[in-house]
Structure formats: structure tokens, C-alpha cells
Amino acid sequence: MSSWLDRLDRRFGRYVPPNLTLALIGLQGLSWFLDQLRPGFLDYISLDAAKVAQGQVWRLLTFVALPPTSTPIFLALALWWTHMMGTFLEREWGGVRYLAYWFVGIVGTAALSLGLGVPATNEYLLLSLLLAVATLDPDRQVMLLVIPMRLKWLAYVEVALLAWRSATLPGASKVFPLVALSNYLLFFGPGLWQALRTRQRKATQVVEAHRAAQEPAVTRQRVCATCGVTDDDRAVEFRVCTCERCGKPTNFCLPHVREHLAAAAAPAEPT
Image (cartoon, rainbow, N blue to C red):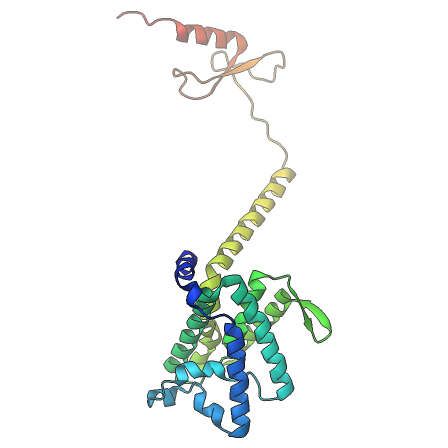
């Protein structure tokens, strides 16, 4: 998938307008403002499966413009956060890959909402921005109020909350958090799985190496294939023969390896 997106970016990247995240938070801020002027406006753009079935298909896309919260100060913080996360991804990936990330998330959320017949918001789409940035740059520090914190720890907290929410949702809605994050799973799932397998393999190798170091060394006794003398007699020198007659590495004491090699070098008697 990565190579496919790279080809699309090389071909169509120049046509994608810049500052897509700025446009997104602009739409979210505008939606909040219009709802203040005309209460109930957000209900007109939200993702409601029943109303989509009645023909209001614009809701399949306009729910992305829902503001994260209705409280002005928290809305400003949420839009700032979305701008910071989104512009990082847009800069790292380019417009095509960034649009593809949003497209997969929108399609996954809309499909699940219609399939389960339940309303949906853009909450998980916005959360997927944090998870993506935390995966690409886990040690990136952000100021959480006045406390500096690495993104990976925020991501762990969010994943724990998602797991708790999935466990407490009723019926088939339990799968909603997982499927709504289909964009993150599709973009990062294979790499995370491979990294996990590599880490497990390395851990297994470390355990086996430690176990081998703790076990007493076993010395294999060498025996001459001709006379049967062993290396218990330290005065005896051994050689290993790998000629065609032996067929496999074979131990000989020094006198008998000479006889063996001489016999192997002698021409065969005519029959």
C-alpha cells in the first residue's frame, strides 16, 4: 500500500491543495458559529443513519465538520490540537497520503454507522491523528497545560480509554471504536505487527542465549574410526577427514588418518 500511495503522490501530489488541516478546523469553527446563530444546525450535518436512508446523503461527509466540543475555550484548544497533529502528518506524508488517511477513516466510520444503524461523530477520526503522530514520532513532546508529556504516553492513555469504551458499549456497538479507526489500522497495523514479532523473536533469542550460558558446557568425545582410541588420552592427536570415502566428517587418530588418506589416494586395483 505504501508504494501505491507513493506513486499516487508523485503523480497527483502537486494538485492537492496545501493546508488541508487548516481548512478542516476552519469548517469546524464555522459549524460551531452557525450553530450559535441557528441552534440545531449541527443536527443537519451530523451522521445519522436513519436520515441518510431517507436521502440526506450529504451527512456521509459533512459529519467531519462537526466541532469537537461546544464550549468556546475547549473548542479553541481542540482546534489547536487538531491543527498541530494534522499539519505534522500533512508535512510528513504529503497531501495524497494525508487525504487517503482521512478517506479511509470517513468510509469506515460511515459504513459502520449505516451497518449498525447508530449515529456517529468525527471523534475517532480526530483521535486517529494523535495515534498516527505518536506512532511516527513517539518521543515528540507536547505541553499538556503546563506539563510536558511525550505523545506515546498520551497514545497509551487513549488506547486504554478506547478499550474500556469498547468493553462497555452495548451489543454490536462494541466494534465501533475498532472499525472507526480503520484508517490507523490499515496504515500502521502491518508495521506494528511486524515490529511486535521482531521484538518477540529477539526476546526469545535473549532467553535462549541466557539459558545456554547457564547450562554446563558438554564436550563431545572424539573416537578414532579405525582403532577406537578416544581423546581421553591427551597424547593422541586427532584429525577430521571429509573425503568422499568417509561421506561425512570422520575422526581419526594421527597415525590412522595417514593410513586412511594413503589408501584413499591409491589407485583402484583392476577387477
